[in-house]
Amino acid sequence: MRITLTSVLVDDQAKALRFYTDVLGFAKKTDIPLGEHRWLTVVSPDSPDGPELVLEPDEHPAARPFKDALVRDGIPFTSFAVDDVHAEFARLTARGVRFTQEPTSMGPVTTAVLDDTCGNLIQIAHQESAS
Amino acid sequence: VPDNLGCLPLVLVGSGSRRTYGRVPGARHRTARRSACAGILIRKRRLTYRSGVGDVFKALADPTRRTILDELAERNGQTLFELCSRLATKHQLGSSRQAISQHLAVLEDAGLVETRKEGRYKFHDFRTEPLENIAERWLEPRRREDS
Image 1 (cartoon, rainbow over the protein chains, first blue to last red):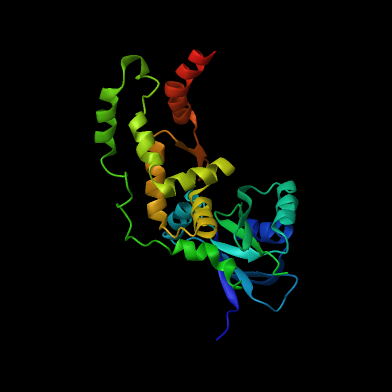
Image 2 (image 1 turned 30 degrees about the horizontal axis):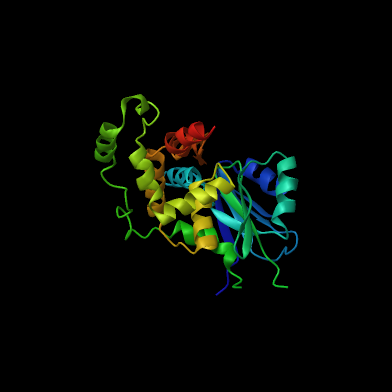
């Protein structure tokens, strides 16, 4: 068994694609029209054959209350690995990204939390080098 | 160092153990305590101590709540998630999110923490006024005597 897909629930797929590619820097992998919505995935340019992130519509009535409750408590929907949280914070802040948590050392990891503009908070994290 | 720490937030999303819910020291009978301590305040102090100075001491009596204030003193304006993460990773305090939320309610009741809503986010700020009131009550008269 392998994990090839993971989802993030977005309020607008077109807006999400712009944010996740143009701002965060992922690359579009699959874009298949499916009626009103699309089967839309992005991958890390570092591993184009790695796990795909599905930008999935949040239309189910339970999805938005769930997302709102997480945002209110500052809880990220998911977490992405970066090389340097501080550098990403500087890069993304310069591009207008809103962070609800600035880079913070949390024991063995450094984390920060940003707003994906599609109704989710996303954590970025790097591990302190073992050296 | 385990290599799965990127999953940290999801662990916390699911960490809602209810065992400690409602058992946070000082979290109960807040209203009763407030009115009781208001009665013992001398009159000219009543406005200053509107939130009830007894509540401040109760709020500070708990080590987890003092740690919460330590972390807010380091950085104001934290979300509940950031506070829970800091307590878990820096202080090995694995309290449930509900328990931390209750601790924050006690601190807020004592006027030591203020919550601030900004759009869809909620941030917690450390308010030092109740501590300044304590200093004013006992330290200022001595300073005046000394000078």
